[in-house]
Image (cartoon, rainbow, N blue to C red; front, side, top):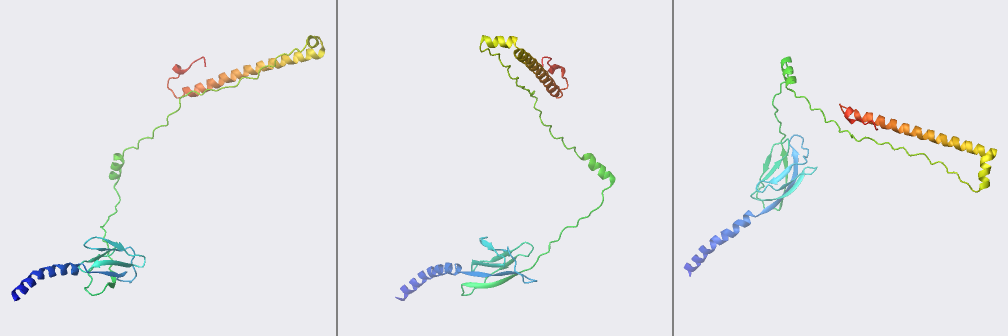
Length: 228
């Protein structure tokens, strides 16, 4: 009986140890608190608080407060720009949440020395000689289409309307008829004069437009048409 009991005890002991180890490693607690400056004790916002094992974490709020869940075997890392990095290992206590204040020490950054000295005239001339000229911007392409000027024709002359032979004789021999005929001829002559002026204006406008068009070319003789 005793041998059987010893055999069962030795057989169950590794199983009990294997089941108890994960439970001990998997124990986790909540860690909350504030991140403060070491000299002024003022809160620091935007501090990265993360787990060293996984890299997961959060950032402190405007009051420097944080709250994160951590395993008892893990380490908290506090990192902020301009401050020294700090690590925190929670103490093994039988509690569910720890309240701590983390003090970060400001870190000074040493910059390299910079010397400012005037350049000698030889160096200035060398720099100016090595400078490449800036390429000129491309010229905009001109529209070489010759503008066409369209002048509307004048209104047609009113046609003579003869209602009856008596009215025709009246227009031919009466004083009023002769005056109306003379006025009609004057109006017709004036319309012909206006039409001639319009033709001359059209030719002059086309000639001016052609001259403006020819200014885009070095040799303008091949682009001139006397018909225009």
